Amino acid sequence: MTDTPSFDQRLARAKFRAWHRGTREADYMIGGYFDRYHATWGEAELAWFEALLDEDDVDVMAWALGSQPPPEHLAGDLLVVMQKLDYVDIPR
Image (cartoon, rainbow, N blue to C red; front, side, top):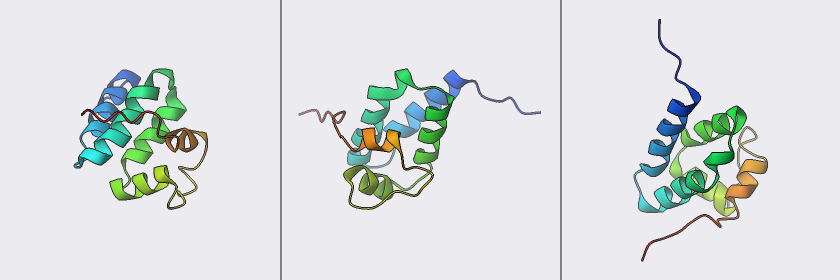
């Protein structure tokens, strides 16, 4: 029998995955989004974000920038918030 991870464990894993994408640009975009908004998430929002993390970075960035339409299962209010890009803080 496998243990089902708790919400907090899933959140911690999502944070790690959000900040370790493989490129600095994706880290800032996806990790920054996580940092700004995760505190208000419930089960549905976390499940959406986990699905987003399963996608390729180049696609996620295109959807966030609005240069490509997102797949139906990721479209909606959470992606609209991501498209604001008001959470990207690039250290100088």
